[in-house]
Amino acid sequence: MTLRPLGSTDLRVSPVALGTWPMAGVTSLDVNDADSVATIRACFDLGINFIDTAYCYGPNGESENLLREAMAGRRDELVIATKCGIHYDAAGKQTQDARPETIRRECDESLRRLGTDRVELYYLHSPDPQVPVAESAGAIRNLIAAGKVRYAGASNCQLEQIETFHAVCPLTAVQLPYNMLQRDIEQQTVPWCRERNISVIVYWALMKGLLAGRLTRQDQLDAADNRRSYPMFQGDEWEKNQAFLEQLREIADGCGKTVAQLVVNWTIHQGGITAALCGARRVWQIEETAGAMGWELSGDANEAIATAIAQRGKAAAKRLFQ
Image 1 (cartoon, rainbow, N blue to C red):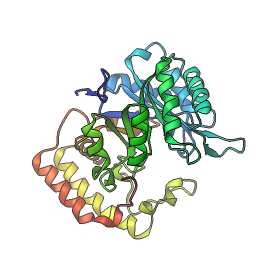
Image 2 (tube, rainbow, N blue to C red; image 1 turned 180 degrees about the vertical axis):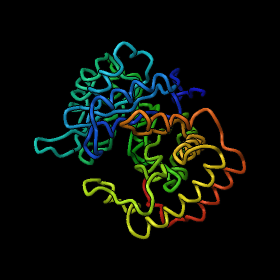
Image 3 (cartoon, rainbow, N blue to C red; image 1 turned 45 degrees about the horizontal axis):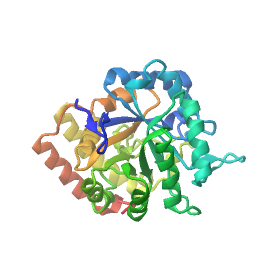
């Protein structure tokens, strides 16, 4: 497995990154600290050095705190990305606040939670409609100057917002949703980033577990599972996606891989994609997705995947970010 450059920096990251959102226990069921810590620690042996978290991953910074515990004594082996601009209010609801003073405060708190004096990559988690992107970018630029942050990132931004941010504070990475069924960023954002040597880090590569291939037509999501609210997990879309997964299973079997490994491997080999975030809350989950690294799909397998995606068509593709 070969590490990849993070933008134009001297940092090298694994093409599969661990996403720690599930460990926050906000939307994922059956989460516990012991398994979460073990999952993070497993990354050291699996070749994953890129860990993604955020200030709002848990009402009290649960994911950042777990990361501090898990990486004790091995901090320098990891490239850590965290995010600012979203927090929980007194009522326990996520709210946006990307004012410069808030970003400064959240950065300091994230560093305390993580038990470190700097993070390698610091994202604006999402543009705040009440705060100009340029102001938020300026705050992160100042954190870089102060040595608390090495490089800047922008997450969940439209291309125009990315351009505005980059003009104020040069970007090293952008983070956006992307998978086999949601590929809008290929049209404008990825080419723009490639021209400027900005890394594209993607989440939802497995579309919240849908493309992992473990859910069958007969499976019923728990009533408390928030995925029930996503159209891809409902009705006709669910049936069409299951037909698509049947095709992927056949291709994966021919490659001697799981569906999840096939999907993540395809994702990290798309042009302009530096890394895919793979969420996990158990060791076996990150072991499986780590198995997407270190090999390439054959021409026949790529062609079969392209055919399956084309047959699935545009019906599944909900427009996200241009």
